[in-house]
Amino acid sequence: MAHAWQNPGSLAPVIGASGAIAGVLGAFLVRLGTSRIRFLWLPIPLLFFWRVRLAVPAFVVLPLWFAEQFWLATSGQEGAVAMWAHVGGFAYGVVFALLVAATGLEKRLIHPSIERQVGFVQNVQLVAAIEAGARGNLDQARRTTRGVLASDPSNIDARRLAYDTALEAQDVPEAIQHASRLLDYYVARKEDALARDLIAEISSWADASLPARFSLRAGDFFEKQGDIRQARREYERLLKNHPAEEPTLRALLRLADLAGRDGAADDARSWLDRASGHPACSSDWRAMVERKRRELR
Image (tube, rainbow, N blue to C red; front, top):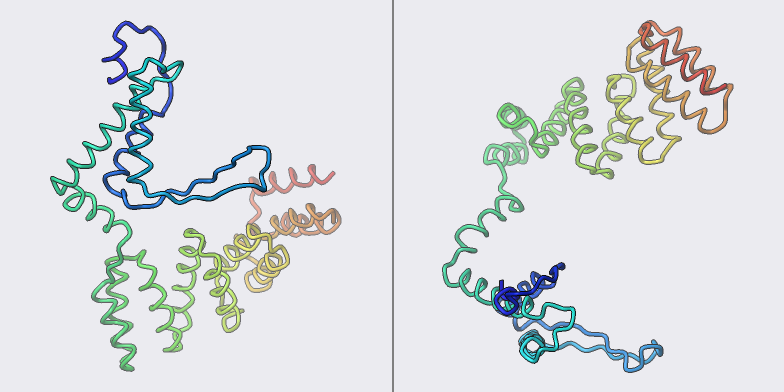
């Protein structure tokens, strides 16, 4: 608008973001005027070893920049740059930032919205469950944690507490159930270290009791992490503990793919043979097995 005001008859297209950047600079002057802006000065551009670093307050740099833009705009030396867009943008940024500060808009509307996204308020019931566990009242801790999960199944802290208390109470089936959900959450949220620790921990005491889905998810996790040896170990654990279940068929195909990727075609064929003879290998699965055989050939 500032550019059009000063150049009403211009037909030149005005393209670029510098007017908006000037607005950011104006708002920066109001909000962060005492901040120091760092500069790198090369007295002779080709001599990179001769350089000077400077840190100048924003309230010094930005008004000087604005004065330069205003002078270029009023002196008719704009050239191919819309200097009045810089002048208007900077002025707009200053006025807008002053209005936001004067009305308290940021504190009333923006801050609470940000806090809701980044703030952390723990569930009161979960705090009570943690305190009950600390006092040694394991039954109360487990009951309260179940209540939290009933109302908020995706509460990862409650899920972890439920797993820990079930483990402490030696309730293996419930601990495994919570561990399976925890692994899903950790993988989905890319908490790789927590996922690794959980798999290692539960594998140390529940090897044969691990459900097929847990081992398959663990193998897939390690495969995506590039830990092929551990992925094979999880898939083979699935084969040993749940030979007739459908996830085992998936594991056989993954083992065949890994062997083929390593150039071990005979091993890959062996895994595919086992897959084609699996009880869950329906016509759709057989078509996939045959396609993988053709790819090997």
